Amino acid sequence: MRQQLLAWWEVHGRKDPALKPWMFTKDGRWPEPHEHLNVLECWIAEVMLQQTQLRVMRPYWEQWMLVLPTVQHLAAAEERQVLLLWQGLGYYSRARRLHQAARQLAASPLPSSLEAWQAVPGIGRTTAGSILSSALNRPVPILDGNVRRVLARLHACLDSPQRAQASFWQWSETLLDPLRPRDFNQALMDLGALVCTPRSPSCQLCPWQSSCAAYAAGEPTHFPVKDASKPIPFQVIGVGVVLNEAGEVLIDQRLNEGLLGGMWEFPGGKQELGEAIEATIARELREELAIEVQVGEQLIALDHAYSHKKLRFVVHLCRWSSGEPKPLASQQVCWVKPEDLSDYPFPAANARMIAALIDHLRADTLSQCS
Picture: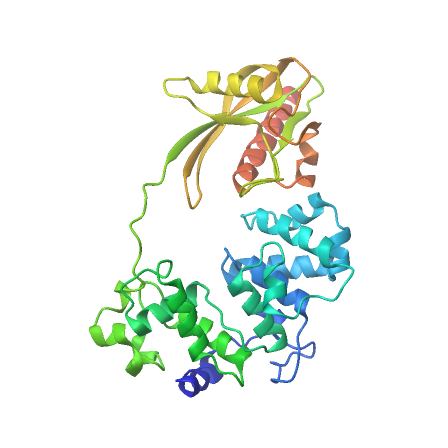
C-alpha cells in the first residue's frame, strides 16, 4: 500500500513550489530524504493550515515570511503587527500563540522532538508530526482532516474519528513509510485533498481502491461517521460606530481570550429578548465603556457565521454625548481617525463595517461641498 500511494503521488501529488513553497529547497527542488527544510517556515505553514485551506493561507504565509523571516523577528514584533499579518485568517488565538511561542524559543534552537514540539503553545500532536516529518523527514504520523477521511473510508470505521481517535492514530502510524515519512505524509494528505474528497470521491483514480472497505461496501461518502451535531445558536449583535466632535471613531481591543482575542472592534453586544436594537447599543456602550451616546441611523446590517454560532450585526452610527470611555470589558479603548483604522487588526466582519463607514463619511463630505 505504501508503494501504491507513493507511486500515485509521484505522478499526481501537489509537488509545485508555487503551492507549498515551504516544502521545497531554496533552489526549487523537492527535498531528498537526507535534506532538511526550514523548520520555522514549516511551523508557520502548519499553524496557518490548522483551520484554513491551502489556497487561502498561501499568500498570508508568503507575506508573513517576508516580514518575519526568523523566530527572532517574530519574538521582537509587536502584537498588533502579528495580528495585522494574520488579519483575515480567523482563529486569531493561533497568531497570539505563535507570538508567545517565538518569545519562549527565540534564544535556543527550535525543538527537534515530538514531545518538545507538543510543549509549544498552540501545537498538538498532528501539527508537531507535520512539522517534524516535513522539515526533518522524521518518521512521525499525522492525522489532519484529509488523513482522517481517508482512514475512515479505508477501514469503513463505524465510529467518528473523535470517538475512535486512538485507532486512527494507530492506523496512521502503521501505514507510515519509515524510509520516506515526509513523502508519505504529504501523499496521504494529497490523496484526501485530490481524490478521497468529502462529497464526490474519485474512487476510480484511487491507488487504494482495492483495499478500501468503504468502496467495497459501495458507500464511501457515508464515512467518516459524524456525531450528531448540536443546533447552531443565532444571535443579533448591536454595534455602535461612535463619532466624537473631532470626527474620530471609538474602538476597543478585545481581551486576549477566545477566537478573536486581541483584535480591535467597534463596541456593542448581544440584543436581549424584546429589546430594540437602538436600546441594545446604548445599553452595551454604557455597560462596557461607561459612556452615553445618541444612537442614530443604521449604517449596515450583515450576517456572519462562525463554526459554533451565527451572528447578525446591526450597526448604527452614534454620537458621543458624555463620559470618558473606559475599558470595562476590554483591554483598551481609543479614539481613531477613520483613515487610520487600517492600522489596527479587526475581525473579518468589521472590514465591511469600516468600508460602510468610509463610504458614509465620503458621501457626507460630498453633500456638504455641493
